[in-house]
Length: 282
Image (cartoon, rainbow, N blue to C red; front, side, top):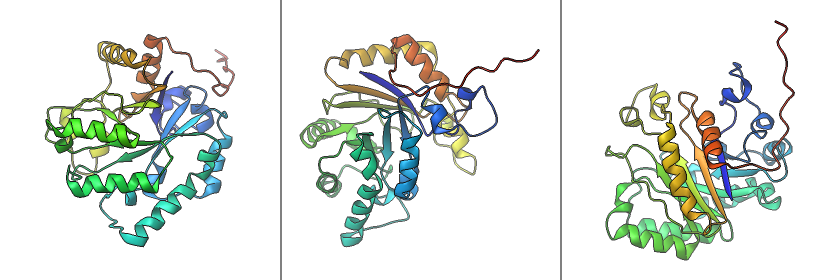
């Protein structure tokens, strides 16, 4: 099975004919069967909020939840001991209805670039698996040390042993802040690909407008076709191949996702209903 989705739902205005408004989750779910949600990264939403999301989508719709920043050692919080353990408990409660209703595709653990391949950090990955036992976990590591010769092979084996999905990340590769694209099966349930774009100049942008530059990129047909050819090699080995487009600084994520769906000839079942077309009077 191949599923395709986007990061968040509100900003993909090409889905609503470029109307200058936020796209609703219900509208988004008429096109895609999965969405990545970063709300949990910044703060844990109320259970009622999550349940409200669930009411806007079909029962088979899936959520990829980005883990809270306190669990992935991002700046601003340095939780240890009982405080860290309590954050894990609170996080699990916040996604409880998604787990119960089988709408949690995976928890995305995206670590900061300074999270290096050290014994201490490997021990922390063991700790996370213990705290989130039985839940689907995907690992996005953004420091090059994890992909050095010898380390990468050990990382893949670790992910296999601990049932982590090692995320294949597509991003600029010719910068110091980049990691290589490693497409490999570490979990028979899920292969997760996240596409950030290949804007080398914008990838290291700083200042107030950095978000508008970092993922400013449109994949061309040749690049999407190359991706397709890589993905089909795993169709018989993995239950679900999920591709998430995050290249939306210029509004290209949704068009690229729909184009990949077209060239892969994938039909998504059980989508939400699209609103009826309104005819222009003239």
